[in-house]
Amino acid sequence: LEIAIAEGVLDKINGNYVFCHDRLQEAAYNLIEPENRSLFHFKYGVALVPLALEIQDDMMLFCAASQINLGGPAAVENAEQAVLIANLNLSAGQKAMGMSDYTSAYSFFDHGISF
Image 1 (cartoon, rainbow, N blue to C red):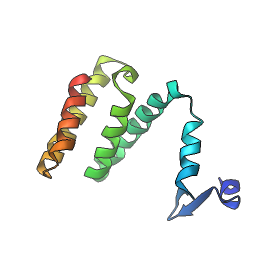
Image 2: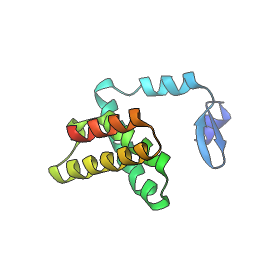
Image 3: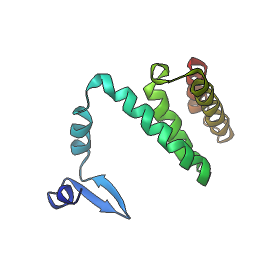
């Protein structure tokens, strides 16, 4: 990662690595084979869930659920995981409703049903 920083591809801000430009991020994303992108979204979302729950960060929970939903039901490994994801979407939808964000709430509820 230090090479990418030296080359001007990444910046390190507050201990986090970020792309220096949106086009660089887009180019990196496009390197992922289209058939694998949904799995990356799914895994990223699943990895975020424990942290979001631990620090009780609703925005991170929304991000985790959204990433999982981009992965879709095909990425689910088993029925137990499908139930957990459906419940995550239910929780995210309820929190969104509590914030009067009914469009997001509907999306979370709709995705939750699909799992």
